[in-house]
Length: 224
Image (cartoon, rainbow, N blue to C red; front, side, top):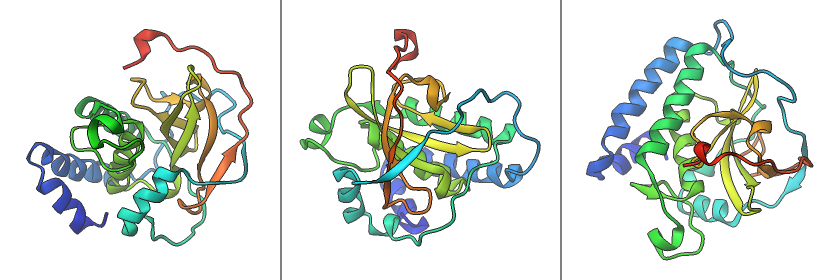
Protein backbone atom coordinates (compact mmCIF):
# COMPACT_ATOMS: atom_id res chain seq x y z
CA UNK A 1 0.00 0.00 0.00
CA UNK A 2 1.15 3.54 -0.64
CA UNK A 3 0.32 6.20 1.96
CA UNK A 4 -2.87 7.24 0.16
CA UNK A 5 -4.24 3.72 -0.08
CA UNK A 6 -3.19 3.03 3.51
CA UNK A 7 -5.21 5.97 4.77
CA UNK A 8 -8.16 4.89 2.63
CA UNK A 9 -7.90 1.31 3.86
CA UNK A 10 -7.76 2.17 7.54
CA UNK A 11 -10.07 5.17 7.28
CA UNK A 12 -13.00 3.25 5.85
CA UNK A 13 -12.91 0.79 8.73
CA UNK A 14 -14.28 2.50 11.82
CA UNK A 15 -12.85 -0.02 14.34
CA UNK A 16 -9.42 0.32 12.76
CA UNK A 17 -8.97 4.12 12.72
CA UNK A 18 -6.69 3.76 15.72
CA UNK A 19 -4.11 2.12 13.46
CA UNK A 20 -3.51 5.44 11.65
CA UNK A 21 -2.73 7.32 14.85
CA UNK A 22 -0.75 4.38 16.18
CA UNK A 23 1.41 4.06 13.07
CA UNK A 24 2.00 7.82 12.95
CA UNK A 25 3.17 7.81 16.56
CA UNK A 26 5.51 4.93 15.89
CA UNK A 27 6.96 6.74 12.90
CA UNK A 28 7.80 9.69 15.13
CA UNK A 29 9.52 7.40 17.60
CA UNK A 30 11.52 5.82 14.77
CA UNK A 31 12.75 9.22 13.60
CA UNK A 32 13.99 10.13 17.06
CA UNK A 33 15.57 6.71 17.53
CA UNK A 34 17.49 6.84 14.27
CA UNK A 35 18.66 3.23 14.77
CA UNK A 36 22.17 4.66 15.24
CA UNK A 37 22.65 5.14 18.97
CA UNK A 38 24.03 2.68 21.53
CA UNK A 39 23.02 -0.92 20.93
CA UNK A 40 20.28 -2.28 23.15
CA UNK A 41 21.68 -4.26 26.04
CA UNK A 42 18.46 -6.01 27.01
CA UNK A 43 18.09 -7.94 23.76
CA UNK A 44 19.40 -11.52 23.77
CA UNK A 45 22.71 -11.98 21.93
CA UNK A 46 23.61 -15.66 22.39
CA UNK A 47 24.63 -17.57 19.27
CA UNK A 48 23.77 -18.74 16.69
CA UNK A 49 22.15 -15.39 15.92
CA UNK A 50 21.62 -15.85 12.17
CA UNK A 51 20.04 -18.74 10.32
CA UNK A 52 21.78 -20.30 7.31
CA UNK A 53 20.29 -19.26 3.96
CA UNK A 54 20.23 -21.69 1.03
CA UNK A 55 19.13 -21.74 -2.60
CA UNK A 56 16.16 -19.93 -4.09
CA UNK A 57 12.75 -21.42 -3.27
CA UNK A 58 9.25 -21.11 -4.69
CA UNK A 59 7.21 -18.26 -3.12
CA UNK A 60 4.09 -19.33 -1.19
CA UNK A 61 0.96 -19.25 -3.32
CA UNK A 62 -0.53 -16.83 -0.80
CA UNK A 63 2.24 -14.29 -1.46
CA UNK A 64 1.65 -14.59 -5.22
CA UNK A 65 -2.07 -13.99 -4.64
CA UNK A 66 -1.35 -11.05 -2.30
CA UNK A 67 0.92 -9.44 -4.90
CA UNK A 68 -1.75 -9.88 -7.54
CA UNK A 69 -4.15 -7.85 -5.41
CA UNK A 70 -1.60 -5.37 -3.98
CA UNK A 71 0.73 -4.80 -6.91
CA UNK A 72 2.16 -1.58 -5.47
CA UNK A 73 3.35 -3.53 -2.42
CA UNK A 74 5.39 -5.95 -4.51
CA UNK A 75 6.61 -3.68 -7.30
CA UNK A 76 10.02 -2.93 -5.77
CA UNK A 77 13.54 -2.75 -7.10
CA UNK A 78 16.16 -5.19 -5.81
CA UNK A 79 18.30 -3.55 -3.15
CA UNK A 80 21.26 -4.24 -0.90
CA UNK A 81 20.52 -6.26 2.27
CA UNK A 82 20.06 -4.07 5.35
CA UNK A 83 19.91 -5.00 9.02
CA UNK A 84 18.37 -2.83 11.73
CA UNK A 85 20.65 -1.38 14.39
CA UNK A 86 18.77 -2.49 17.47
CA UNK A 87 18.76 0.47 19.84
CA UNK A 88 16.84 0.39 23.11
CA UNK A 89 14.16 2.57 21.52
CA UNK A 90 13.90 0.33 18.47
CA UNK A 91 13.61 -2.78 20.67
CA UNK A 92 10.74 -1.22 22.64
CA UNK A 93 9.03 -0.22 19.41
CA UNK A 94 9.34 -3.75 18.05
CA UNK A 95 7.76 -5.18 21.19
CA UNK A 96 4.98 -2.57 21.10
CA UNK A 97 3.96 -3.31 17.51
CA UNK A 98 4.06 -7.07 18.07
CA UNK A 99 1.90 -6.79 21.19
CA UNK A 100 -0.53 -4.33 19.61
CA UNK A 101 -1.23 -6.50 16.57
CA UNK A 102 -1.45 -9.71 18.60
CA UNK A 103 -3.94 -8.02 20.94
CA UNK A 104 -6.15 -6.29 18.38
CA UNK A 105 -6.38 -9.08 15.83
CA UNK A 106 -8.18 -12.25 16.86
CA UNK A 107 -7.07 -15.61 15.42
CA UNK A 108 -9.31 -17.14 12.76
CA UNK A 109 -8.74 -19.42 9.78
CA UNK A 110 -9.14 -18.29 6.19
CA UNK A 111 -12.12 -20.62 5.90
CA UNK A 112 -13.81 -18.88 8.83
CA UNK A 113 -13.04 -15.37 7.60
CA UNK A 114 -13.04 -15.57 3.80
CA UNK A 115 -14.47 -19.04 3.04
CA UNK A 116 -11.20 -19.84 1.26
CA UNK A 117 -8.50 -22.38 2.07
CA UNK A 118 -5.64 -19.87 1.68
CA UNK A 119 -5.90 -16.09 1.43
CA UNK A 120 -3.25 -13.52 2.36
CA UNK A 121 -4.40 -9.99 3.15
CA UNK A 122 -4.33 -7.23 5.75
CA UNK A 123 -6.68 -8.22 8.58
CA UNK A 124 -9.58 -6.07 9.77
CA UNK A 125 -10.19 -7.54 13.21
CA UNK A 126 -9.29 -11.21 12.78
CA UNK A 127 -7.04 -13.34 10.62
CA UNK A 128 -4.58 -16.21 10.52
CA UNK A 129 -0.81 -16.25 10.88
CA UNK A 130 0.20 -14.66 7.58
CA UNK A 131 -2.31 -11.83 8.08
CA UNK A 132 -0.66 -10.94 11.40
CA UNK A 133 2.71 -11.03 9.63
CA UNK A 134 1.58 -8.74 6.81
CA UNK A 135 0.19 -6.16 9.23
CA UNK A 136 3.25 -6.17 11.50
CA UNK A 137 5.53 -5.80 8.49
CA UNK A 138 3.42 -2.95 7.12
CA UNK A 139 3.33 -1.06 10.43
CA UNK A 140 7.07 -1.44 10.94
CA UNK A 141 7.76 -0.09 7.45
CA UNK A 142 5.37 2.80 8.09
CA UNK A 143 7.40 3.50 11.24
CA UNK A 144 10.61 3.72 9.24
CA UNK A 145 12.03 0.20 9.49
CA UNK A 146 13.78 -1.01 6.31
CA UNK A 147 11.91 -3.51 4.17
CA UNK A 148 15.12 -5.49 3.70
CA UNK A 149 15.16 -6.37 7.42
CA UNK A 150 11.52 -7.53 7.61
CA UNK A 151 11.19 -10.99 6.10
CA UNK A 152 8.03 -13.08 5.87
CA UNK A 153 9.07 -16.58 6.89
CA UNK A 154 7.50 -20.04 6.55
CA UNK A 155 8.17 -22.51 9.37
CA UNK A 156 6.96 -25.85 10.69
CA UNK A 157 5.65 -25.74 14.23
CA UNK A 158 5.76 -28.41 16.95
CA UNK A 159 2.83 -30.25 15.34
CA UNK A 160 4.62 -30.10 11.96
CA UNK A 161 1.94 -27.72 10.70
CA UNK A 162 2.84 -24.90 8.32
CA UNK A 163 3.01 -21.50 10.01
CA UNK A 164 4.09 -17.96 9.06
CA UNK A 165 6.14 -15.57 11.20
CA UNK A 166 8.02 -12.32 10.64
CA UNK A 167 11.81 -12.46 10.88
CA UNK A 168 13.47 -9.16 11.82
CA UNK A 169 17.18 -8.99 10.99
CA UNK A 170 19.22 -6.82 13.34
CA UNK A 171 22.81 -6.29 14.40
CA UNK A 172 21.94 -8.49 17.41
CA UNK A 173 20.71 -11.34 15.26
CA UNK A 174 17.33 -12.43 13.94
CA UNK A 175 14.19 -12.09 16.03
CA UNK A 176 10.77 -13.62 15.40
CA UNK A 177 7.40 -11.88 15.63
CA UNK A 178 4.71 -14.52 16.05
CA UNK A 179 0.97 -14.44 16.73
CA UNK A 180 1.18 -17.72 18.67
CA UNK A 181 3.87 -16.63 21.15
CA UNK A 182 3.67 -13.51 23.28
CA UNK A 183 7.40 -12.81 23.38
CA UNK A 184 9.72 -11.63 20.61
CA UNK A 185 12.32 -14.42 20.58
CA UNK A 186 15.64 -15.08 18.85
CA UNK A 187 15.00 -17.44 15.94
CA UNK A 188 16.71 -20.38 17.62
CA UNK A 189 14.48 -20.20 20.73
CA UNK A 190 11.09 -20.61 19.03
CA UNK A 191 11.14 -24.38 18.68
CA UNK A 192 10.22 -24.08 15.00
CA UNK A 193 11.88 -25.62 11.96
CA UNK A 194 12.59 -22.92 9.40
CA UNK A 195 11.65 -23.70 5.78
CA UNK A 196 11.94 -20.57 3.61
CA UNK A 197 11.59 -16.81 3.65
CA UNK A 198 11.84 -13.68 1.55
CA UNK A 199 15.23 -12.65 0.26
CA UNK A 200 16.62 -9.48 1.83
CA UNK A 201 17.34 -7.99 -1.58
CA UNK A 202 13.94 -8.68 -3.18
CA UNK A 203 10.72 -9.63 -1.33
CA UNK A 204 9.48 -11.47 -4.42
CA UNK A 205 12.44 -13.86 -4.33
CA UNK A 206 12.33 -16.52 -1.64
CA UNK A 207 15.21 -18.57 -0.26
CA UNK A 208 15.35 -21.94 1.45
CA UNK A 209 16.58 -21.99 5.04
CA UNK A 210 19.19 -24.49 6.16
CA UNK A 211 17.68 -25.27 9.54
CA UNK A 212 18.28 -28.91 10.47
CA UNK A 213 17.67 -28.59 14.21
CA UNK A 214 14.87 -30.73 15.69
CA UNK A 215 11.78 -28.92 16.91
CA UNK A 216 11.60 -28.26 20.66
CA UNK A 217 8.44 -27.75 22.72
CA UNK A 218 7.13 -24.40 23.92
CA UNK A 219 5.07 -24.38 27.09
CA UNK A 220 1.35 -23.73 26.90
CA UNK A 221 1.84 -20.58 28.96
CA UNK A 222 3.85 -19.07 26.11
CA UNK A 223 1.18 -19.73 23.49
CA UNK A 224 -1.76 -17.54 22.60
